[in-house]
Length: 445
Ligand SMILES: Nc1ncnc2c1ncn2[C@@H]1O[C@H](COP(=O)(O)OP(=O)(O)O)[C@@H](O)[C@H]1O
Ligand SMILES: O=P(O)(O)O[C@H]1O[C@H](CO)[C@@H](O[C@H]2O[C@H](CO)[C@@H](O)[C@H](O)[C@H]2O)[C@H](O)[C@H]1O
Image (tube, rainbow, N blue to C red; front, side, top):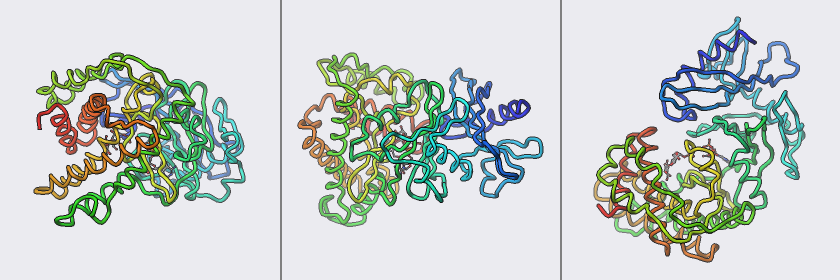
């Protein structure tokens, strides 16, 4: 194993910066130190894979650092489907990223069901979830194909295991929020976790089979409106407003539960410091510069504001519509933000603003595909659904977020600036969507 480590470190230095979950595609790597390697397999059947839960500490050339989970498989012969995951050759074997190896992923599921332990790593079924060794028999794992900040594996359409890639100190906020929300009808049931010393490696949940993602539903609705001449959003084939209304209610209920379980407070809005990232955002996205002083003014807030734990990165891709209700997923917050910011108490209007931005994204994204005279329709769709979402939220929360216009606009602007940076780094051809929103929110469009 001692000879595997340097080989793996060299391979990871070239491979890891190109993985979406490492944050910032293609950053140059200075050093990789593999600091932990825990054997997953107890008694390996002959010819079976060797599995290692590996932790790599990475120092990037730009001074950034990160600690990442990379489950590693080692096999003599590799099934063809694992070819894209190959990292290195070693001692006549192939070393690869094991998140696509169904055999090794199933082993993790099995270990959770058995309340297992490997060295310092504990595989824990969630108390009173009913998940046990018997629950997982005969299920095959498949990786989720969606673009992700982490890596998830679905087992037989019943369970989903998310392996956190970037490891943080303490309990992952996603796991913490799911524990706090265990009685909520608006989350996928928490079934177990993988926990190491001082960090969370993974979370197991029930899989919402056949659920539709909010983002796809919204895109379909906009497309229907664009495809039909002379109709309003309310009369187009796939009007989304009734769903947006229910979604608003679900988000308000989740906020109420988070406040009850994890606490709330009242602070002066100036302490929220919404402009803290503005200078570095402008450095990353020079197109923001002409609006800098107006953005700064809009982000200056004062007066009392209620704060609590929130989702932190709420958008239509983070909500799933099951036949019964809306589920909110992925409570990790903004993937690149420091952990202290992600668990800090925040205004719930920040989540509301995230979702309102997402309605704009859905309409503007479709507009890029159907350009031209449809701009008015896109805006009508956005307004129609924003109104419905806020009305649904108000019914459950007892206050209308839209009535707090100054605060809501500031959070939308903060989010749009964040999105401009996110898109510049990850999807440069999308950056016009948030930039247009910034212009509108500072009164320039
Ligand atoms: N409980 C679930 N049931 C069904 N699909 C899910 C569930 N949780 C996540 N997904 C799917 O997996 C994708 C990634 O999940 P997410 O929690 O957002 O991961 P990440 O933190 O890696 O972004 C989601 O977009 C969704 O399509
Ligand atoms: O889902 P993640 O936690 O990885 O969030 C990041 O990626 C999102 C894109 O996948 C990004 O969301 C932005 O694009 C969405 C459409 O793809 C849109 O619905 C959101 O409103 C918009 O913010 C998110 O900002 C980023 O943190």
